[in-house]
Amino acid sequence: MKKSRVISFYQLILLTLALLIPEISFAQETATANQLDLKDHFVGYFAVAVTVIAYILAMTEDLHQLSKAKPMVLGSALIWFAIFIYYSSEYGTAKNVAAVFQSNLTAYAELFLFITVSMTFLNSMTERGIFDALRIVLANKQYSYRQLFWITGVLAFLLSLVISSLTVGLLMGYIILQIGKGQPKFVGLAGLSAVIAANAGGTMSPLGGISTFFVWQQNMLHFTDFFILTIPCIVNFFVPAAIMHLAVSKETPSFSKEIPVLKRGSKRIIFIFILTFSITILSNVFLDMPAIAGMIFGLALLQFFAYYLTKSEHKSERIHHFLTDHEKQDYIESQKGFDVFKCIAGVDWDTLLFFYGAMMIVGALSFLGYLDAMAHYLFTQISPTLANVLIGLSSACIDNGTLMFAVLNMHPPFPMGQWLLLTLTLGVGGSLLAIGSAPALHVLGLMKGNTEEGEGYTFTLHLRWMPAILLGFIASIFTLYIINGGQF
Image (cartoon, rainbow, N blue to C red; front, side):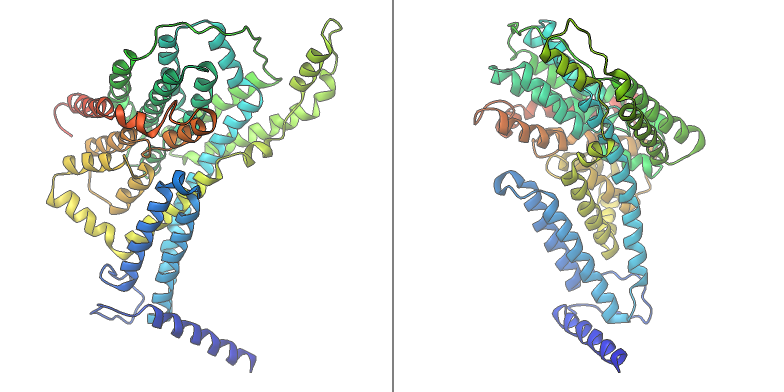
């Protein structure tokens, strides 16, 4: 009796929801639960509307102070619920929909773990005082503002080769704020240069950017193929930086001398970090092992090392008698271990959840047939080269990782030259506007809380220098064209 009531109640729910999602134009009915083209169905229209609303809310995060992850996660859930409800009510089963959902979830899981491990290493190095020591060293060298402008830009470029570019943006923004106190013009220009450098450096390495990681993950480009993008990415960074250089002050700031203090184990953590990425790259190149396998191995090494540091604290409690009480306290703190799980908890969960929502929305739109239609227009109606440049330009206002995932779901039959062009334009195209890349959004948020209104790195400042950035974008494409022998 109870069972029949449950079944009836279940059927009543499905019937009610089916009435809420009426058929508008679905001509061909099938008896099996095969994938259907629902572009002209209410479910498709609903998915597009939810996607647009979710992205508008995510891109205007600074206006309403609603984190970008919230609308994306909710939007993805609503779209997939609509798809599952339609298939279940129409055919009595949605098993093939579940398989598609799980395949998209698997792709996200690898990205999630990769970013989590990368940011855990960064948080561990921050906790050990490595980046604070870097800031003190730069201050003690008494460089001029122009020298600091180039040093911070080059550092952002190099760090983004092995660290997520969004994390590099936040790190360099912090250093620039500290060494540029009282100089909002320098802070703004150096912050902008660091954003461009982080995007450019992350483009020539699958370890530094979300879009490049997707291309590597799907085996469209091998790790060594990214080396071809080295010179174009350098050009992309150098051209706008050289133009901005003229606007940076020649003065030399004066800083009070500080002594950099590295906590116990800091150098060994750097070694584990380098070892982790070396193993990740080599195992992928020579063993075809997924990148995440090497990253998780490195995380395990970091966990054991953190355990060793914590357990061996008592061996380092001997304090020199000539130290002051304050110095003794600093020494004791520097010798302590750390909890690696606190570093894991400190990752940017808002960004990770944003990418979950974005990837699941893209997967849903692909399942509904929109990406196939878009691919037909982009890669058959117009030339692939023009399409890839236009996609790159659109990354100025739409996240490049989401766009790359969308293109991969279109399954375009690209030769390697076109994949390199797409990787380049998507990676550096986000530098055109302040809302176009994660590093820029992070630096904007950092500046907003630490500078006066309208000072430092702002959306307006970025927009003012967009012609110089666009010149670097065009120059990098022509550089790649020349390197590829006059063809893509």
